[in-house]
Length: 105
Image (cartoon, rainbow, N blue to C red; front, side, top):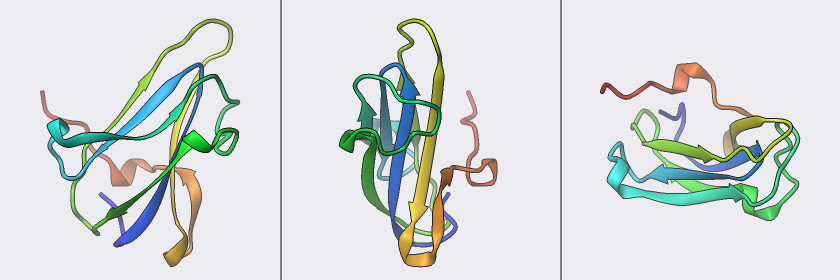
């Protein structure tokens, strides 16, 4: 749930490959790919590949479904999802727990 209405930049970083999906609401069936890593990055290395960033308009307080799929190939291992809202001065960083909730299964 975003703290402000904004065009949010989403980022994914991982070792190895990963894909980031975001839904237009809280329904997983509406998810679409936002960003991806086709090789590997260091932890929180947000800008190694252009594919790691996607921009999506979100509304303050509305719930959205977010999913990351990660494949570890060997060696090191990391996965991080970050966001930023330039318009409101929210710097790029990992999405905090206060903006997320786990689905009830």
